[in-house]
Image 1 (cartoon, rainbow, N blue to C red):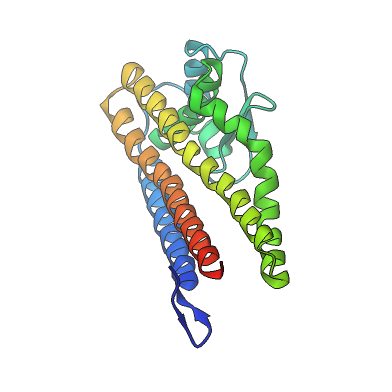
Image 2 (spheres, rainbow, N blue to C red; image 1 turned 90 degrees about the vertical axis):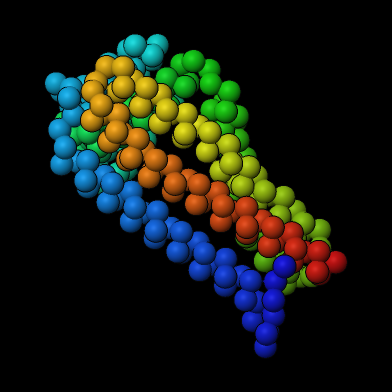
Length: 229
């Protein structure tokens, strides 16, 4: 792995281009899907926050709060304060897109309430990943410049934790979307289910793309290290 011409590592630049291309493509796709379904009213009477509240209560997560957060598509569930943080458009809006995103975040809270296995693993990895994401590149560069193979190998191990975290994130995100779609299918109408599947599938692709790039980068680092050995 890795092809050098005139001192240029084209494999590395290929990974950079892959990351940029996939990132732009997935972000553009989710924005298009969200824009489309934000113009379609959901069948529910109420806002995204109202529907999420119902899903939380029925899913055994009635103790979870709902708070607003600024920005566009900045919604998330934070287990530290046990709140859904919904952007204003999804908290107060009543479109299919707003309801889908709000229920997806509610799905994460329900996962925690039901002790969902992959989410437990993901939560346990957070402290390690917070350290490894900040440290691996510094350790890697130190190993390269000081020509210390052990540091390079340690950096790769640190980066591997980030890759594992992203891979574990995939079933967590997919399951949260599944819970949201199932809730909307049971309590809403076909338009809610259709729109939610399109919006949340587009959102899931961003996580798939990120995981794919990380795996490719990890394989590149391993191959680069093997060539140096």
